[in-house]
Length: 300
Ligand SMILES: Nc1ncnc2c1ncn2[C@@H]1O[C@H](COP(=O)(O)OP(=O)(O)OP(=O)(O)O)[C@@H](O)[C@H]1O
Image (cartoon, rainbow, N blue to C red; front, side, top):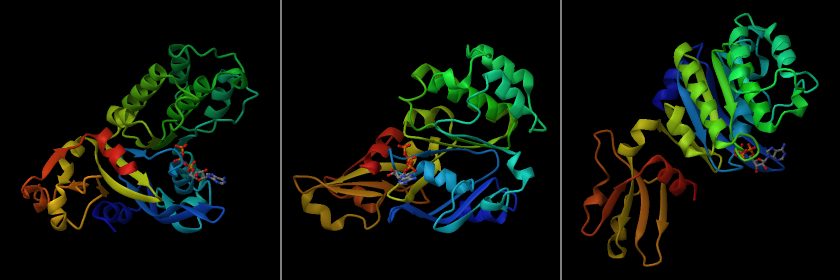
């Protein structure tokens, strides 16, 4: 168990913790023993390719599906048996909100608001105006992007302590401007109130806009987790010429043999900030990687 998870699991009221989650469909594993912990007030962007299992992980962490094995905790309670009090502190915005589609946006917000002790009705009203969503239009008649925005308003107006958001299919829902507005609002509100946020995406720029931390989900595992601002300093692409590959480091996040026999590896600095020794081999080269390159390299 890594140090961050250890620290979080030691905190009884940690907002969200996954321990060794395993889940799959039709005999195929999607999550292969995922450990993840969120510290209060953090904004974690979960990134992975289409179908990597981000939604599955989020649903399992919130107790919306029962994993094949492993466990999840929300505010220290087992996710599958959450108390009403814990539920009222969580807001979840799925990819395609479907609930209460026979109500208008204003009716839905009014109805839902009654269940939340800290409901911010003026905020909900202002946001509908700001995002030019007709309050008297049936939810069923809004576009998918408008629907998702109304759902984000619902989520934020409840002033949750934990906000979980799935932003995976931009083409189906939000246009780039709407996406940016939504993320800006999210960052603003989360920053003001200290809300813990987990959101999934496959768009790297989303992370750079709002996340303080990033976790990569790939092949059922969390490949790495780090501060968004650290990645440039911390990861690099190490190129080793063909005649030197015997000296390649044993540890790397990904490894690719090129046609000319040379090796490209994604490597990490050690605790003292040093690259692996192989970076000093004659002819070897190391390039620091930004988040986008890091994601592409790892997800390949
Ligand atoms: N109910 C289900 N039955 C069968 N297979 C499923 C089910 N739900 C998800 N899957 C499969 O599990 C894998 C992970 O899906 P999931 O929706 O968790 O990924 P994701 O990372 O959120 O994807 P995306 O970014 O495309 O939204 C996919 O291959 C998907 O087809």
